[in-house]
Amino acid sequence: MRAAVATLIERYGRLDVVVANAGINGVWAPIDDLTLDEWNKTILVNLTGTFLTINTTVPALKASGGGSIIVVSSINGTRTFTTPGATAYTATKAGQVAMVQQLALELARNHIRINAVCPGEIDTNIEANTSLRFEEETAIPVIWPEGQVPITGGRPGRSEDVADVIVFLASDKARHITGSPIWIDGGQGLLR
Image (cartoon, rainbow, N blue to C red):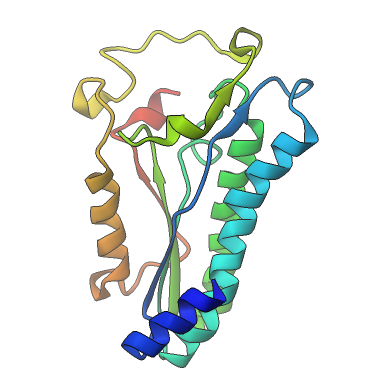
């Protein structure tokens, strides 16, 4: 992160926008089956990664006179809690939103806004880093009306749906928004 920020400042002279977007689903399993290593890996990537991104970039944002930080969280852990066995994942996503809300006041004096986007089901390749064990032990049976995303007839959202909100939050049009989670889930979180 330090090298990336140094390269960016050298090339562009300043930093105005930070998007903390790295994350994994990790292992989804019953709590008594989840290992400490599995827990730690999810916490390390999702929550510690967010901390390191913010920690490393805030000095450059301060030097620029302010800016905008957008943390990519999830509806899991912020609006819904029914994903089978996703305890470590939901803990990281709830932690990200708590971090955003805590830092909104701390960073305001430096004219730095910080917000969270909380996507629902989005068509990405995140399934490639997901391991699901013993789903039957933790699943809550649900019958979705026309799929689990009401506004699209059950289809997942697109990454552009999230990107458009990130672009808005990074812009001056969001100048009075800080410490806010924004759900981008097509109503999915309202069903869960």
